[in-house]
Length: 105
Image 1 (cartoon, one colour):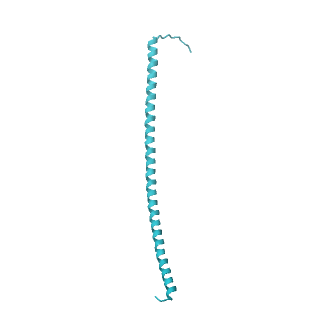
Image 2 (tube, one colour; image 1 turned 60 degrees about the vertical axis):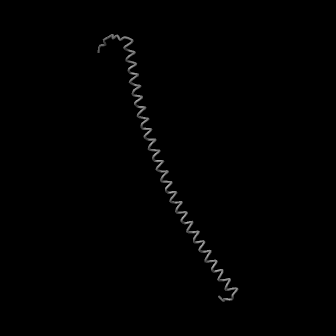
Image 3 (tube, one colour; image 1 turned 180 degrees about the vertical axis):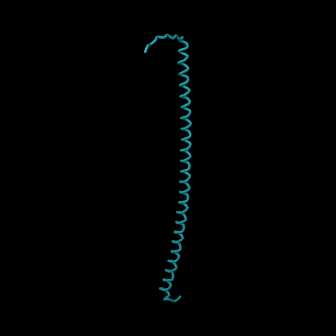
């Protein structure tokens, strides 16, 4: 294999222009990549926020449902206790009447 020596002359201006154009091209690619990354990040952020909002809404609905159920059960229990008080009062009243009146109504 023979090597030949060739001399190519470029002006400093053309070499610098080529370097400048290459840097510009790399900068454009980096800018484009940054835009893509930003768009993907924004999209991901929107998805996460939406999922968190949906989760919060679901939790609120479940909490409200649970609160209603607890309130209904508490109201029912309170009514049962009040009914029991009335029944106990009636039994005690009848018992006292029987005791004091000697089984005479």
